[in-house]
Image 1 (spheres, rainbow, N blue to C red):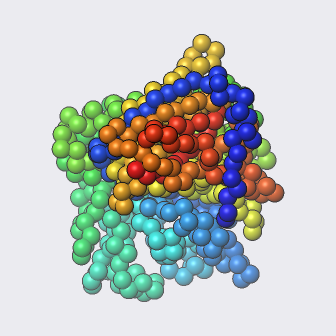
Image 2: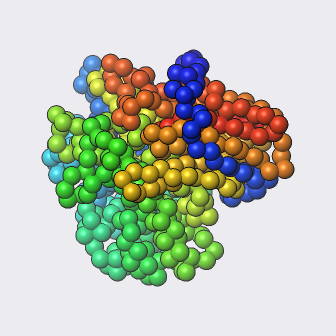
Length: 512
């Protein structure tokens, strides 16, 4: 798609440049803050609402579910480093054996968690692995600890990965797959403190030790064992888990959602919000930094070598679901506000690369902070999709150290840092800079220096912004909010000056 050039006067900048605040940024182009793991840009596909059925899959003329080519094409364009399945809370209700074999012989089950709908198990292990192959991504499979047994989990692991003669390999071949799938990432339960069993950390730590014992290495595959991590600021959970089972854990799975409100009362609307709702959501998104800092400190005590990954296995905005949508399906619209909370969160991940190596936004299609929404044959990319697209230049690149005067976004006597950013250099030596201005009212001038390096030009730039805070895409107008070419960055005498509009995300490629 050819992007139209965005002229600065169209954004009303001509009349505001004189009054807007100025900020300085210095990037150390020779520094190294660690590699930005591609797995930080992971996705999540739970059997929830229309995420699986009518999301990744649709019914064909024979009333059979098939993978949606348009969704696969859009996600491949974005790039999918990993995909987490089958949950989420559904994982601890899921029995893998119900999802293999002839489809007309698979038992049904009521999805009591999400809308009380009947799940016919049309999409099971083979179907999910077919999707993984089409997306050219890596699977993260989450096993059932809450209602399953050690034997169930061990058999599924063998079914997925055993390369030779074994009972589960034989069964896999009978179901049409000779070769193993070589799955590495395996979650031992999900949210065991809540929907996965309401366990105490001591009890789960012992269960984890038991269940993980039976995840054996097969062929060239060694299991990367992911333990249920804490909910938000439950630091006791992390402490107990690391103390009692840290020697057997490869990754701890932290979950944290960004809410405008609370779980028990009102979570706020996705589209109908005021500036107070904008401010609160940005404030909640920035809490991620404190959470990662504190959980990392606990993990460092028991694992000073930083062998165990801190994984943010579920994150994103959670609003009240859209009026008229099916109860329990968690379908919500996605606005510029969601896009900027995503960019701020990704920036925070990039500041904790010593231990934060993987994350999964919740979720991919039609659920919560989705990348894609579908309606029958129609499909649209959300503003959050475009944030991920603008950030894919940072994946697997080296994070560059920088200093940034972040300024303040003030409202009703409270303030937040106005600016957020990421700077990186890729394997070809290209420097990329992303800057987010969360202030919905005030444009800002950012002056960027590369230290001893002399900047000569801006190779390219894109911007995501709009006049209204709640701008979003609809099926009738799917390109209302898309990245535009950005002409607000200029280089003069080796210094880069960026005119950063209010409520905007900009990504630049720089050259010396």
